[in-house]
Amino acid sequence: MSQNTFKKKLKAGNAPKKAGPGKTIFTWMEDKLDVKGILGEGVPVQLVPPVGFLVLLALIYIFSNHRAESMVRKIEKAQQEVEDLRADVTTLEAEYMQSSMQSEVAKRVAKLEIYELNQPPIKIEVKK
Image (tube, rainbow, N blue to C red):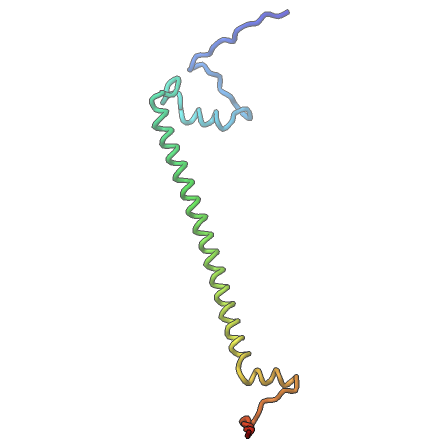
């Protein structure tokens, strides 16, 4: 059986560089941004609450901006529907007014052999 052994810890300056296809975007960002040079070995604990608060504010801002834009889109869509319905109502009202004119009614009832009187009606009086 083989024995368990410990891996040797590499110092910060002796870290092996990944080359070629094994290099990911995160290792590239780490190389370019030099995070360890800025922060040292770890993240200072006193910076976590203010940074977390700023991240929370940024998320709230993004969420509210998204909601506002979607609400504007819904309002514009509703306004377009209202304009379309208003145009339809105006058209229907005009057609109704046209069809309720006396000449139009006379044309329709002429098919039923009901004609318009040309003389006024006669009043019939009955004597007791």
